[in-house]
Length: 216
Image (cartoon, rainbow, N blue to C red; front, side, top):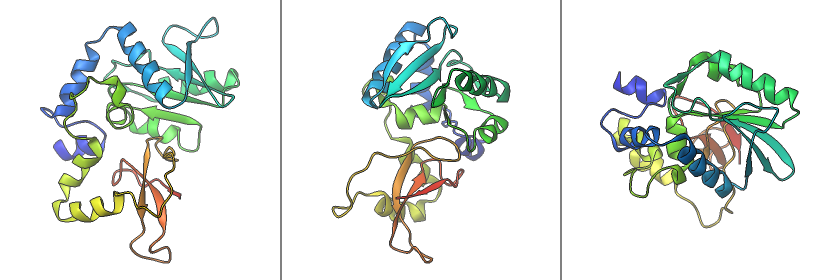
């Protein structure tokens, strides 16, 4: 189960990442929301409680004139399925929002991940929070970024991956987009073969379990 859990986004039991998520789940709802809104501000969002149109457990996000609904009410749930994700999609569409985000410290089922493909919904599970929102965690709580752990399954390729993911002086910095397939954050890499050899592109941070890419 170790490799399968990793590919599904579940930190290895006994790892620093698993310990960080356990500590996060022990927070009160108010403390979690406080840290979550702080992390969202780092991404340029303003966050308000949902108000009359939404139940407790939603945040209305605004950035550059667009509204996004974020649902965190199931943030301690170990597994979130299709029905809950579909419900958020319908609600955000009815409210005329530009998109939606679903946050949990657990996992999303395969059917839920398949449902969001091509839809303006971002699914942030425990692994996604570790990689995307370090402000949720106490300083020093996470010993290694999740993206570094992924190379440990293929040690002979670790050096090559490190070289590809390292920033280059001749490439202008850009805010990483979200993966079009699973909604996770992306990182810039360099194509090593094919007609696009030597060109930069965005690759999903869940690679190799997710094959999502975008042109740089």
